[in-house]
Length: 323
Ligand code: UT7
Image (cartoon, rainbow, N blue to C red; front, side, top):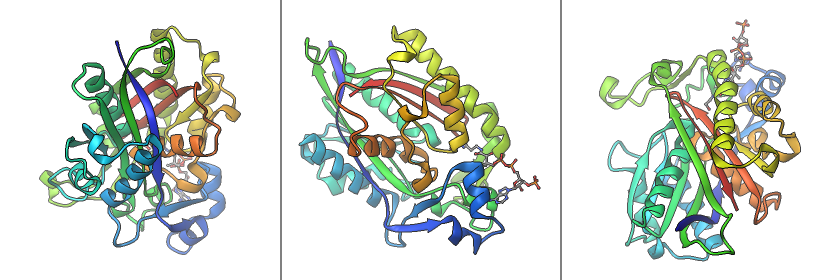
């Protein structure tokens, strides 16, 4: 049997930082409101020269370095994003070219904030069916480009960044028996698409549009969906919640993260939180949190990690992996 092993993690955040105090000068808001309602203090913003693909390439290079492999060893690149460089071709194509991943095939996945989980699930299936051996899975966003900087309901929430993971297929042995991707569950409900959307799109308006969110409604669904999918994972994986070493959640709102952790009875010391310094980076948030966890040595080899995400669509997802 083939296992999907996490062989390396990388991340990149643009240099420019936008604080809550900077936002106070742009819209009618306050550092206090943003911190209390969201937990966010600052976020990173791409420079004019940077694009989703350029952030993705830097995150991918870090992941390749940590996995000790080169670009030409990648068989598959999946890039999750809501903010592609171009309408076509896929942003993953620029990444492929920049990495010299000449032996890979590459494409994008669009599942908003759950995008990385969707992409990881697709990579896992390609690996487990022996179609590919080594996959690069990226979540990358320049959300600052589709945020209406005059709308205080949304502009305080989002940030730019990229995270990447190398997933490798390995024949199961005594040594790797319990490691790798154990289970991923994906969900969506298109009836709720208008609660978190953009005001435009290629076919509808020939513009990218701006993010629009019914925050309170999204919030209400988030804690329920995230804790339900986590429970579903546990129920179908022959694993107990008390076995989980760390929760690595999508970073949208600290109250959502705390609410979900509480429902699952996971103490906050066992939750990776990057939200205060990064804001919501959509598809990039989970790989960036994984990267932060590994870099800070909180996440160690052998740890059982529960990932969860929820975003526009609605889409939501959960995964269990052992490093
Ligand atoms: O990543 C995808 C998933 N996304 C999420 O999970 C986000 C889910 N939603 C949320 O995180 C929260 O709903 C928000 C942070 C977006 C909003 O927090 P809230 O506690 O739900 O606030 P609210 O929307 O109910 O607004 C409360 C008040 C309103 O004023 P009134 O109508 O009570 O007078 C808003 O106009 O806060 C006002 N408000 C603000 N005030 C200062 C909204 N945004 C701001 C702001 N600064 N930036």
